[in-house]
Image (cartoon, chains in turn green, brown):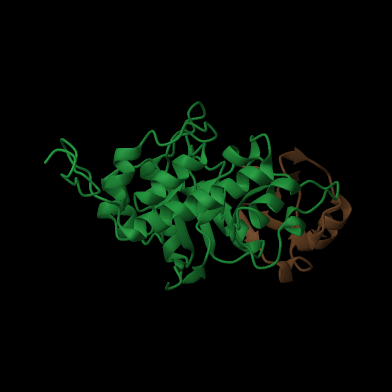
Length: 256
Length: 66
């Protein structure tokens, strides 16, 4: 079989699992890389601690692409500021735009996200915007120069699964960029389903970080994502609206 | 001057390099913003600070909203 490469921002990836930022510890990063085969890991930019605490970059294996996010930004201006600082920290041109004004549901601000995407794309960043799945916004993001579109499945950290399923499907069908489903995916079956639908990749953190056995869950996610991808590439079998259809010939010898 | 939101007093014309050293930051691990403009690493020795300046020192963290 031809190798299935995931192209993102001009780079090639074999894995379609991205580790989102948040509940980090060394074990989670190790499980994500070794068991879930993550090749992209999201990081946040924060005020530095002067206590000489362990540098998170030391725990990320060589060859993993870093995807800084702009979490904490409430406006496009703040997102651009954070993105520039992250580039200065020296981890390439990828940036995940994440702009939230709402602190209860942590829903992204689509309008500011479009503004930040346009601005950062002009500055030479490879921009991956996190967004509420809306077709008009997604089209604006394409025009703004996004490298992918990252719709949420459910509120961040909720593990509630594909609450926005129908709208993600519309983006997959209509948008000519990779659709990376981010936030809310809580189980491997949900990751599998969204890959079957044609998503390009899945980002998760909480689902694995809060699992009983982290390495085992990471491995379950990898298999689910691979299974869903393979099913999508195969083309799903058709659904009959009504009635059944014999899958094996109904031989008549019993009643002839 | 204000460093990461905290008002502090330093000698006039202290360089960014010297400030990072005195504050205990490792220059390889941080990025520095002076009055909302990025200071590139090769300008750390020549960028001199005054009392009215606002400095941000950031790094990557395991954190974020997720």
